[in-house]
Image (tube, rainbow, N blue to C red; front, top):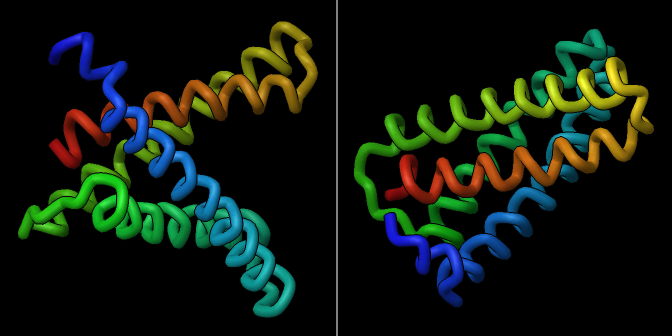
Length: 133
């Protein structure tokens, strides 16, 4: 991995696309969670898991097609990698929020912002150099 690739225009464009796809995932996540919880009366944590799963799935397909232009014929392997990375990212997010807001008494939303930045970078770099490499 060459350090200059981090600063290339193409790499930056991929990061911007990845971030836009992630932003769209917020709407999928919250929308699905709301529908499951409020309309189907599914328990809130199960509804939250449904929202996360649908958002991660839509993010995978959008990133596969738009961000990384993947032609990998083994979609299930690629999707599994993407989803596992997303789950690890969720764990990192929870750990950062818990550590900053719970242990160090940093404002919850500031903690969540820090966690979001860290996890976005984690997800992008691992997906760029592993899932879609």
